[in-house]
Length: 296
Image (cartoon, rainbow, N blue to C red; front, top):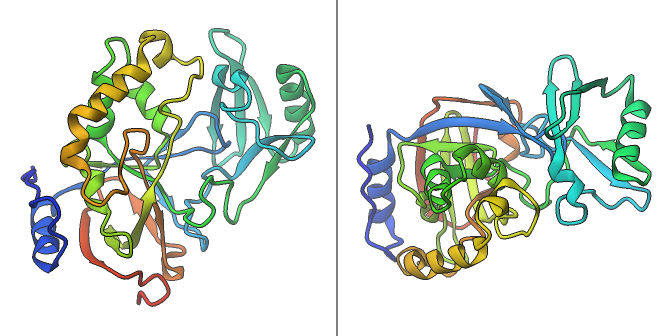
């Protein structure tokens, strides 16, 4: 097990980088999730391939949109919360069911696209389309479509604040791609330098640059198990923020608990490389962005 020691807050220099490297050199990829359809359930995978765009192959490659081209998501339509998705990546078969019902309908996403759209349109009560982008996917941060990062301990810690919220529900809430194991809760704060700096880190054979904190719908008022389990959800988050954020805020970028995951970007040289569960994680340096100059 790696030693969970952290350097002194605010010390962003070469010695700090070395300390980080030594302390988390045994940290590893604990799990990988991709989300085949934007805003719907994710699936756990043992490995994921990096696309030329920096995104993970198959992640958010499909999306539901209305006739105006607007995405159907939890912020715009609460019905998304009650749709359950299963997905066979190799066969490209999606299973859809309404939560707490028994019937699951299976569709081939290529051959039966009109049938899926008809089923979804009936469910939502208005016409929708299922669109696809295999090159970049449909990511909220189009400038940093790389995998989103969070530590398993962060998910567990935030879930523990709510008596009837399990880790899996909080995982669904945060919707990160790669979870890092053997690091403490809120380790993600170590992936942010000063405003004009980026932290470069390596997962297996792939070099990443941490760009900014992502913003999952942690504080949204969607009708999910979290809000049902704890009606005072926002007040708990606000109280925890006051309690722990003074120790976390070093650069002013990770400045509230609604921004827990890390957005990333990757160099073109990462295309085709594969991230596996168990891959070691190493923080390499804090510097200006080297995105277009990183060698193989």
